[in-house]
Length: 347
Image (cartoon, rainbow, N blue to C red; front, side, top):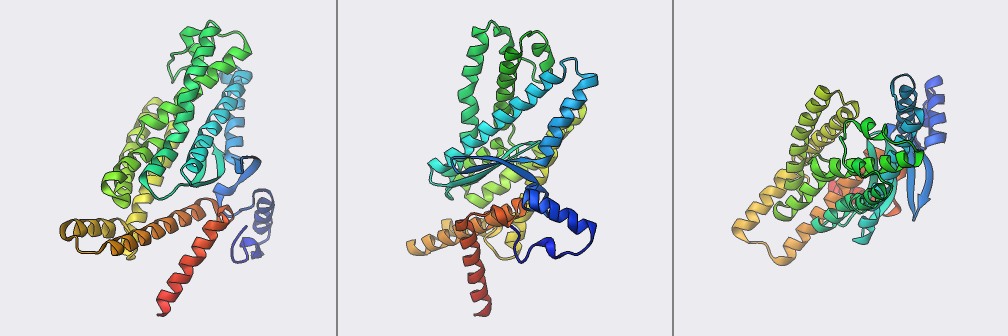
């Protein structure tokens, strides 16, 4: 769904026809993040498969034909394991968010992992629980896969070199053992990668932000997490280039861009006079020095800050997935905010 009549008024010949075709298939032809096919719904959560994930998985399988001694079948098992483990990880985020009273209605699977659309209550503990919900699934699966491998006589394969999976897989003869090991490998890789690297918006970066939020407040913690994310992405990018790890390089670029964009958003919000980093930080410092405002005034200021943060989140969601991804509650919040600004501008 596209707001204000959508992009399909364009009569630009083949380009417009192509966008109309994409619109029928994906729903949002103008937003590349919306180029995804809905593969199903689980507990009211829509699962979408991005076009680039299909291209990536197909390319990996085709690439393995002339070069990979493991063969096409083993590579296909690896891609399937990646899809299953990442999907379970994202469901962990969604159900954790719902457990703390938030909303979760969409999962997008794409080459760099999964993106769960979650809206936890604006409180550090709720955000922390939502973030840890994904890694908790991987942590719970780790002893299951490791135990099954040991029961199958593959105890030596429980520990492995993450950059050379072919060493472990090549020693296994049966397909079901290979499939089990790929699940174990992918599960540990997702767990370690997400929690050991403090890159925003990955789980490690979001965990750091939630912990800092408790002490510093929301906006300052976002600024610190985004800054750490920028420098962490640079370090990961250098490592990926030196080691010739293409997927790691893609993740580093993505994390760096998101972190940089978040820093710019915080600065822009402050420049526009909204509740941004500098204004929130100054307000907190002034309150700590003077303790002047009454309790009701402080609560009102907190409510206004929460409304602004929620509006920022909705706008970021529109930028990532389009208007069609908004829930009815989010659309109402956007309309209410627009009406308040209109009244303020005319008054």
